[in-house]
Length: 157
Image 1 (cartoon, helix red, strand yellow):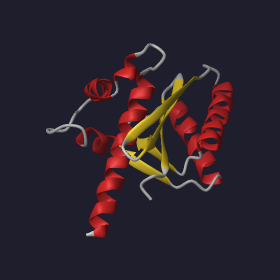
Image 2 (cartoon, rainbow, N blue to C red):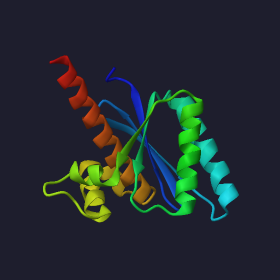
Image 3 (cartoon, rainbow, N blue to C red):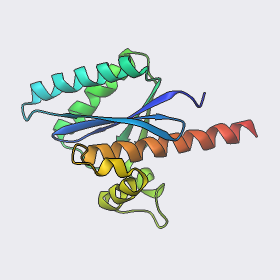
């Protein structure tokens, strides 16, 4: 159950990233740049998500519930979630505040400190080829996997 591949999806205005986790290990982060044109961005994202799901045999997906999302990001997120649903992949949503609380005490209040923590955990993500979406996806994936690990251990007790 713990060896399933989890895809943490982070979508921003001009990029999308998917962090792939097995247990609490970050295996890979894939990034796509998105066009400013909404239709082109949707087509790119749809192709990207389908490709990742098929190539990496994704069995779980996690998305962040952000307090403030633009209409563009909301639409793109809905498209990505719909692809997961159509492939029969269970989806978990983690609220932004829960994500912030899971990385520091007292809880983080902004995304920049979260990204700084992600950079320290995965120095490879400091490369210019990775952007903020990569850091957000990695942090989201670790949060989801840790939450799953604790849930599995508490149910076995």
